[in-house]
Amino acid sequence: MFILKGLLRAESQENTLVYLMLRGEGYARAIASFYDIPVNPVQKQLARLEAYGVIVSEQIGRVRNYRLNPRYPFMEPLTALLKAAVAAYPAELKSRLLVQRTRPRQAGKPLISAQGE
Image (tube, rainbow, N blue to C red; front, side, top):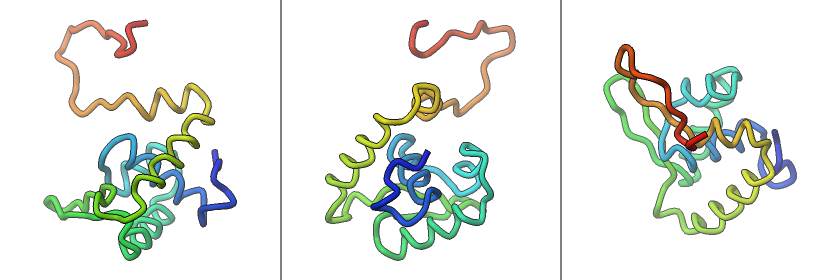
């Protein structure tokens, strides 16, 4: 979904910013696979946003990890705008964005929803 069409340059830019805001950090391939889009547009947006100072990155092994730049002067209004955009997203996409699994479950352990459903 491209909610901020008149304000941002591309849908991949909105996707990247929303992903980094809600997940805290990420890398190009993870963002692209989450939204099921090619990696190249995400990489271009990450490079552009880093050049403008909106995000910062660090090299972890062979992966460049990105996060929002807390020193960006307009971070508070930007996050407020992104949160408003996320409020307009479908419930399924919002729940997928908010649930983050970072390691596999123990073998045989029952699956319990994070929202208590």
